[in-house]
Length: 114
Length: 109
Image 1 (tube, one colour):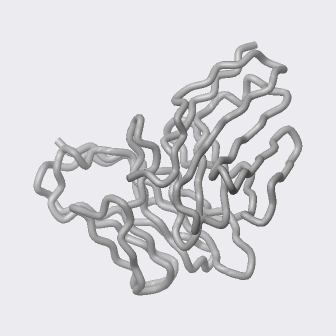
Image 2 (image 1 turned 60 degrees about the horizontal axis):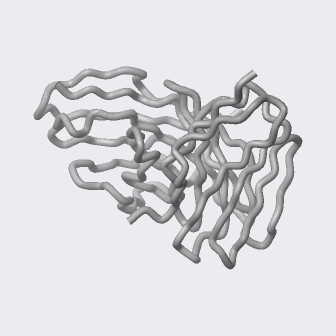
């Protein structure tokens, strides 16, 4: 079974703190994604990585950065946390190949910025 | 501008009847479409998908229909069961993967 693990289920941080959200997958997938889920807005793509050290901005990259130094790990960084970054953060991974396949999600991190 | 749209925030159906969830997209480059189901405090789980070269894909009680000319897809659940109650997200993929806002399905016993 594919496993995508996010380092924390719940996190509370103070405004202005630098926050690291970690995501690890165990299936050697090339693609990894970070989304945030907010009521009425669905899942919005923050950043996408198509391979190691490769990244592309999604729809809402402002205030975030990412790091992909190893294939299995994709980190989301909030440079200076703000209250409007309070959200559910979801990481996903998928392989690339001749055929499209689905992406597999982690359990999510509920981040509260106070 | 959202490239994948689910215009119905909620849907309520009676157990045993058909549930139809709809999704529209704007980017004609999308070539693979997926439906995910999500419960609170959990990550989305994959349900069913369809390639842009097909117009229908069926898996048990779940069928996805794709109308490329209308840039529209739908998920049919027949018969609906109370355990199907969840939020359903439509997704579309080319290089990355974009999601809609979700539809909360409630199946009443």
